[in-house]
Structure formats: C-alpha cells, structure tokens
Length: 113
Image 1 (cartoon, one colour):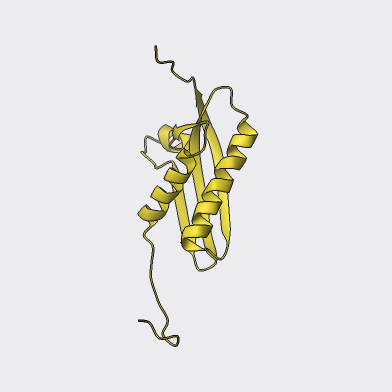
Image 2: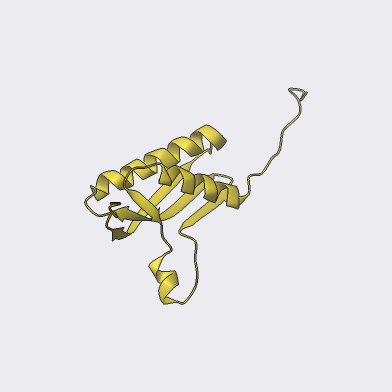
C-alpha cells in the first residue's frame, strides 16, 4: 500500500495514447477510419493519422479522420473531439487538453446485399 507521503510516478507510452484516441474516434458513428496526413503522403513518408504530444502542461492531440459521405462534418468533428476528450479525461486526467480534428477524406458507405 502506498503511504500518503509517497509520490507515485508513472508514464503512459505514446502508443497507448494513440490507441486510446483511435478507439475513441472509431466509436463515433460517421467515422469511417483514421487517415494519414496529406503532407506526409506528398513527401513520400508514411505517417500516423494520430499524433499525441505529452508535456508537463498536458496533452495535444492531432487526429486525421475519414468520414462517411452525407454526414454533417462540423457535428462529426465536434463529436470526435468530445468523445476523445471524455475518454482521455476519464483515463488519464491531463492538466490541459487540446484536440485538433482534420477530416481528410470522404467515402461512400458500402451496401451489403
């Protein structure tokens, strides 16, 4: 058991945060997937569609998503921000949190016959 006078120190790997952000975003109806940044594609680089930067002040999240055609894109981006924010607040309680959402592409829903 930890004494009240002891200080608990722990770290959360960036890969864990990226997975948390991805899973949260995919919960939102209308999100078809996670994209990579266009700049990375044009430069011939392969980049993750999610970047998480941890500092002593908090977290900064940048996520690039693919949306389904026909969705209200403003509402979709807001929902993605909200669910990611809720999950991060619940699981790691950052001091400060910034979440930037970029809708990078649209796709049609496929119909299964």
